[in-house]
Image (cartoon, rainbow, N blue to C red; front, side, top):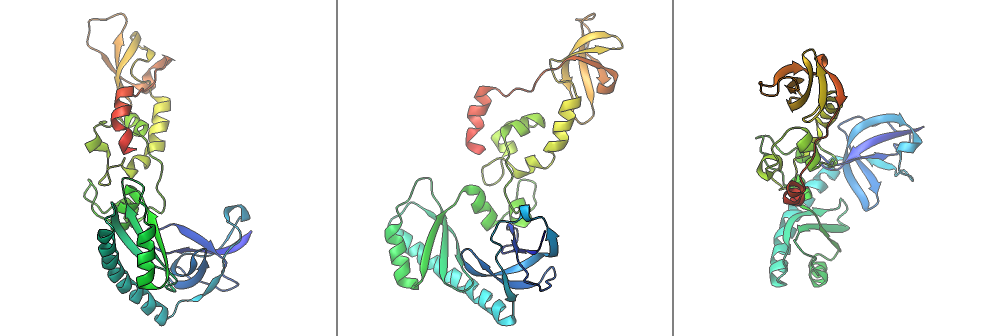
Length: 287
């Protein structure tokens, strides 16, 4: 077991563990820590806590000290420099005629490195751009190509639900989502219905997936054979949320399907929810 604190560097960024070095840090305090990319300014999200060594990525970096007012001024100064660096980089991209979209610029706390984040549909040869930027800023330059999900997380915005992006406000890491989840939740497989502003599958498909997986295990699906109080039949429709089934009785093939709760039937042979290959091909670009 080890005593650690959890530190985050962005509003909805990943939380990293650090060694408090026998000092006590409270949630909400700012600290200066040593990271793989240098000295950084972060916020304590988890106060002193004892955790299993298996949860720690060794070696555990130390907390250097609590942040001071001068450190906070440095952070604000870096933000101003980032705005100027963004404009300069845009000019250089146009000068070199590169097919890339600049998304964000980030200074490390000690200004030892500037990171430029960009998106592009293709690989970009930015070696000359790096040399040009290094000659202007006289420090280490790193250009990092990111995906559309990362772009949305950095820039923020409003989702189709009308609320700020989950990835911008509280999701530390992107959760894996798939078309299969949308199908199992009974959602329309129209890209406009299940994709977010970033053009990829909505992250919120993951939130209730465990509940749907449980309901799928206990609910006979379309095509399942069941025994009802009125005889054997085939499920033609079902509702995971209400648990109601519509069963076509073998003894009454011309009658309207029987509406019955899943608790009132005995499952003889279940069916599976299948995704048509054409549906998968049409949606493969939004996963």
